[in-house]
Length: 592
Image (cartoon, rainbow, N blue to C red; front, side, top):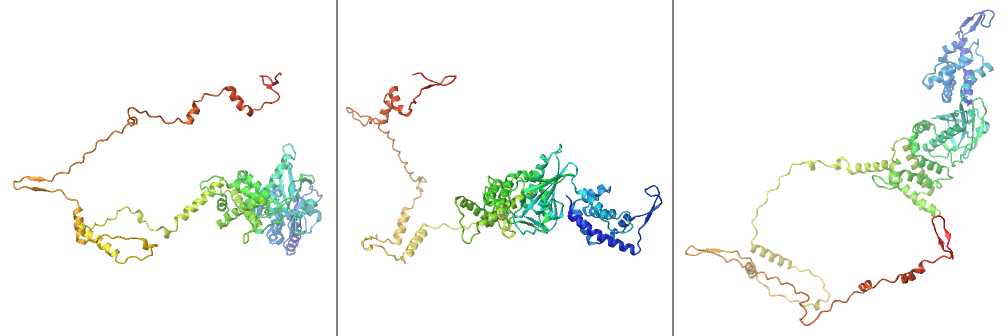
């Protein structure tokens, strides 16, 4: 695909370079010549100017021109400097800027090679530019395809992604219909951008397999754009393909109309978008594992609005995060843990509100809660949360199991929160294994019985000094009797009398020790055997057995006759009008 912008920059550079080189010659820096021997196309010896060498020797002056830098940048973006130098037999440098600088310098040397002056001849200029544009043509066995990118806008004229390029339609040589394109949103004067890619043909030279490879390349570019940021972007319904030396042919892509709103890429987004495209192209296994969720995510983006896509995006989140896990939490908590949102509680509430909103949509129009975000805002937030999780999954930040990653993040955060700060942790005294000395016990004499009784009586007298005054219903009907009061001395004597006496012993005058008589052990009464139930009946009387249960009588009945049983259940199995006999071969109708 020929780059028209490159042709324009080379034209401008040629004019500026001609003025600069002419000034150097007028300033006294002459062009060197060499003598051509006869027989090399000349009958006599000829002076041949070494203009190409003169251009290379003064390349430093040419590189100071603004148009030279613009041509180098255009050559770098078109990625054509390498093939151009290889066709000239020059080893291209590895650095893209150096490679493009060398290619532009070589173009100027080719433009005035063998000329005595630096005038621009149209034929020589067209031939020099054609050498560059021929390198932009697809090689033998390759097919080039372009598709307009609907809704896409950026300030640059070209963006190289992995395996494809996004170029401005008016900067390349494409069919007029492709340059006009379709604009679902935005102003009519905004330029159209194309996706351009080259793939190899089938081994037999067919386009069947090549078409599938082109479609996958374009779908990968659109997926990369949608994962990077929000916006309405998609492929146009038609594209164009061509092989080397052939014309452009129109094809159908089958893509639907993208969501309204457009997609604008800022200048600072180009590098990050290129990195994401490179990651998706290199790690194809990650994309395959997320295929179901990605398809549902993009199906939602093809809907008319965010509310229509809510069911698709929630289903994609369920594909990724619903199920058992170490923490056993639900979908809202896992989404909040993996989305990378600064406020997890807000993300959790968004998913909870979205789930309830989904039920309301199934039953009818969603109800607007006063002071709460609207349905469109909730659906847009869910889309952003899903996009963030998918992007982190594609880049490998979340591993292979999203549920385990979410639960581990929640558990780790819970443990960190449980540890607390250093000031809250306290000291390490609980780890001191040396036992503290126990306090010495205070030995006190036990109180005597007289002290205990006196303390109890004093407590009772103190408690009754100031009786509590409260109302009692029907107090006049209550009769109170009081026992005669006892003196403290009498109470002490009674308590001492009730105290258990200690056994004693004494010695007689003759030295005999007399022990206190031991207490007599109680004599256990002989256990009487219970009388039998027959002993309760006198000799001449009889006893009747208990009445027999009715259930036992029913069980003792003889079984019913077989014919009687058949007659009882005959109504449960109605007979058909036709009696069929089923044999070993095939069913047949019975005779009679």
